[in-house]
Image (cartoon, rainbow, N blue to C red; front, side):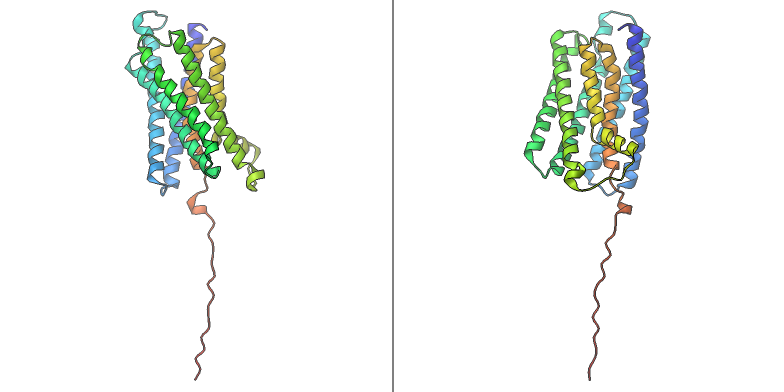
Length: 267
């Protein structure tokens, strides 16, 4: 892939990530307005995911502008090596998915009736992907994925992340399917597609698969653009799941009629 094509792919990914950042901000405001009585730990988790997503988008735009203005078509060692901002961006890019996957793991544990065999594969896939991602950070000082071994570790981490996302999506669909729960959703076709692809994690799973396809196709420059979209998609999937709950002010109330007893005074 040529230099201009790579820049175009990354610019498209950066633009989409900015749009998703705005959507995530709107979802975050909606969450705090509609669900003010959620547990404090869940609120802290929302803040953490939002901060990581915002930091990742800002750092991505900074790196893109720095590369275009200073290192376009340059092969100097300074441009090939990653600076501190890039290292932080890589850390954010692997920490945010791990955080959201951990939340989904807890959700699968709840809807499965707290069955360990449903959550252990998710824990193993998420942890191994995160550890492999952390291994990638120090070698980048010598060059951005310049070593073939580092590329293989990156591909292994992506495969582990795909396995985790697929297991989460399949588990959520399996345990919440209408045939099992007996609850039929009255959604329209568009609402059903949105629910399945965003709330259940199918979208992030497809984006992670596309990264592996681009890796095997020999288009590493385009991976950066897809990775920007993937990072923001994790955030929006997490917030969409929280906001899909029924609003507390619209919960059905149970009216209980207390029996009254008539007392007759007798003389």
